[in-house]
Every structure is written in C-alpha cells, then in structure tokens.
Image (spheres, rainbow, N blue to C red):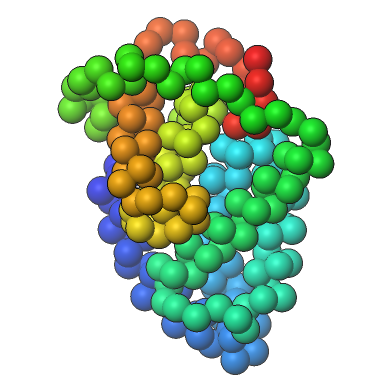
Length: 205
C-alpha cells in the first residue's frame, strides 16, 4: 500500500481509535483491545527500527505502561497515537541503555544528503516503507532521520505530533524525514541493498 493510502487508512482509523480510547478510559476492556489492534502494527514497526528483534518485548513493556496510565491521557485518536509512540520511545531508549549500546555515529549525515533527489526515488521509498526490507534500510539512516521517517510513515503521525515525540521543532523533524526519505530512495534503488545484515539504530560499526 502506498503512503497516500496508508495516510488515509490512518486518518480513518483515528476516529474509531479516539472513540475506543474514550470507552477504554471508562473501563471497557474490549475497547482497549480495539485501540491496541489499531495502534500496535505501527508501534511495532517503529520499535523494530529502534531495537530490532527486541521490539516485541519493548512493545509489551510499553503497553503495560500505557494501560497503567490510560486514565491520565487526554486527547483524540491522533493524540493517543502520539502519546503511545512517546511511551514506546522511552521504553526503547531505556532498553538500549540497559544493553549498553552506544548511539550510532552520525558521520553519514554529510552535505551529500542535501543533493537533489528525484521525485521517483522519494515515491519509491514511500511505497516500500511497509515492507520488512524497508525497516532494514531505515536502520542505515542517521538516527534523527530514521526516527522521523518511522514516526511519520510507519506510525502515521503528522509533523507536529512527531516533533512532540522527539522533543524537537517541527521544522527539524520535517527536514530529517525529507532527507531520510531521499536517502532511502537511493538505497532502495541501489543494487545489493540487502547484502548487509540489519542492525538497530543503537548499534555502531
């Protein structure tokens, strides 16, 4: 499914999600299960980019915290998506710290990332982001770009919501997502892009 279709799907689900969250806050366990089913796929994709194969475990920890603090949440479906992504990110960073994994160097972030990208590579990157291969490719981006792409495309957050999750200005997140998608387009277009083994954002080489 292309990014346009993905975005429409996310927006359509946000109305249902907001209603489910409101019922869950009143103690409706079935409604909480509905909210989980809507949010979990994107959240898991985001966490795979952050912690690799440990994503399921980190997601479980995140959902325990989400369930515990649900009464404190105020907002709509889109807000809930951002709130859960923030919690998941904190759990992922805690996990990486426990593993004593150093953040990846950002030496890849050079002026070459500012080279003009063709619209076709940008679109190609967007089209492929729902695939497992794309998640492996995202892990090769500088961390700020990888997180921006994951939050915007995989979790389905808009620019301001993604910026809140990352604690950055919306413009910085918009730029990081754009650069990341251009670089993904080049990676997807390159031959042998799957030869390297996948790694998480926290790993260094």
